[in-house]
Image (cartoon, rainbow, N blue to C red):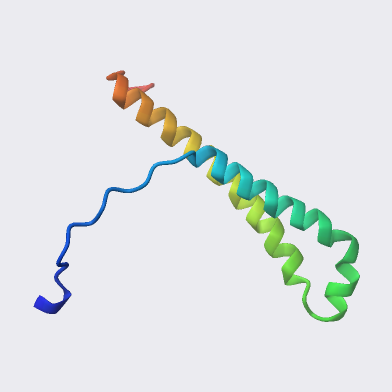
Length: 88
């Protein structure tokens, strides 16, 4: 097991504009979905219609991600300010 022991300490995680990044990705997925909808028949004829639904799923999961990262940022801010959690 010794060969699997890390030799260096892991670096600190990078914190950036997480909400903006997730929002941008969600918008891109939704735009890709909208761009493919007019060509749905072409995709379906070639058995590639999963591309369209993948883009819609990406947009839907992105909405869930936006909700999550906004809650996370609010919790991090509250913790930094020393405020109690709402409902606690």
